[in-house]
Image (cartoon, rainbow, N blue to C red; front, side, top):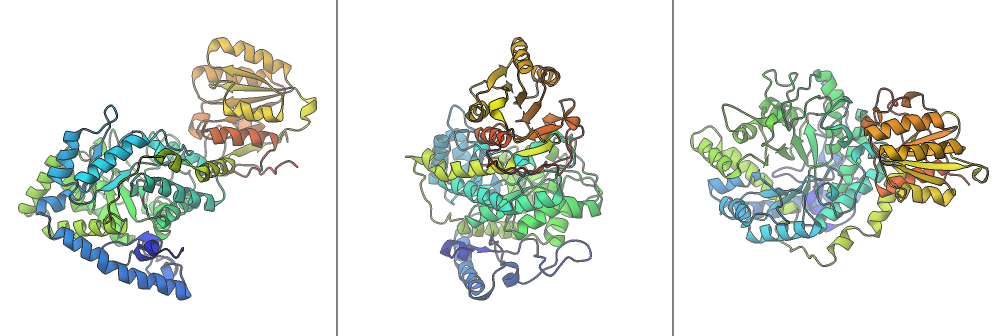
Length: 596
């Protein structure tokens, strides 16, 4: 742990301190597991992983920080009415319309309701900066700014650095790269005034037909998902941004999208503990201080079928009591159909279940009033409102919100995407590329002076990065297939070549048909897929392809890394992160050394 006053004063176990606690998140298991398979408690000193004088310094600074955070929280609380305390627990979503957030909506939520924070939809760096500055200026209590950034800012801010999707990162064998990635995402978030990222996705994608998780997951192996997620959280939290793992208790084995309906996870308790819970447990031990509870029916945990986000049996009894999590608990978006209720406002249901933060409810102003009415009617405990509001305020203090700062727009884009960022993008890409099979020893390509090489891009132009890098190694003939008319020329070129390298950039009908024809026309064939593994299964014959390369995504860096891998410009050690019938098995991958 770096000896930064900020980090030492607000972190323990690597995680942000919760109100009235020493920040224990999922009781650490240095002393081993209990008989039920969940973690047992140990002391804060041992759980922090610190020993000797540095551990003492951490503990001493933690103790010193608590009174300051609590004093600030109490001073804020003393000025808030019941309605304002309830409103602190609401985080609405605001979407840009022609580059701006509605001033009326912002004023209603921030000034009139006094919400605790907000989530922004898709917008540019400049638009984000303007909206965040404007909202914070209007707020009586500093606002918690949140991001739904599963692969960094770029998921919502298109002019920011584009990192690979999680499924590509799940192929990486070195967790330290994922930790560095977490630090970088945190750095970018802080530059833009964001304190919380709803990431990482900790769902173990064990169902290849999952319509909503898929490439958002690190993969199918619980231990690998846990290692990747924990490393990311350690990096992010270590830089002072809250990581919120999702979607507890695990959305990986579903066949229904919870945005549209209520999915069911029919796992046994044993499977939930060994598969679904594991990434959350490990990420929390690494410092993750937030968890998002999903809209999921889990009969093994709640026999009544109540969505996990609205279920006390899941949110309180399992997440908080059984697993010992005492960080901030967020609902998934309550406007989603998977959270629909008939007898009670779903915000009231989620609060009773144990949620601290009510995210993106259907009608925030009305929902806040419904909570007020429920407290006045005795249906919701006033003491719990106060406790959770205070808990949130302590987190706000620890995230630096007691000292408001204006985001400076000048040069902001270049600060976000700097040389450090570009270097990390390159390293992540090189570590992700996977040579799934090399049965004929074709890779890395050699004897280039004696071989006629053709490069065909299916769904991308010949000006793409993949072609540019390939041509640095070989004076290859290049072809692009973007429609049916362009297939003929590519097939003719393939027949003349000794080796055909095919970059696959989409899975549409033209691409799939051209792929089959190219396989038949080629003497030696190297397919390189720039689509996620779930789309790869739409191509026939991959399970018996002697040579197969997976790059998982089409970022510029992955295109470059894949080309380098084919020609031996880099070493390769990626591993396929999922089981895909007809494509590859979990863990497949060949280690190739860089050519001398």
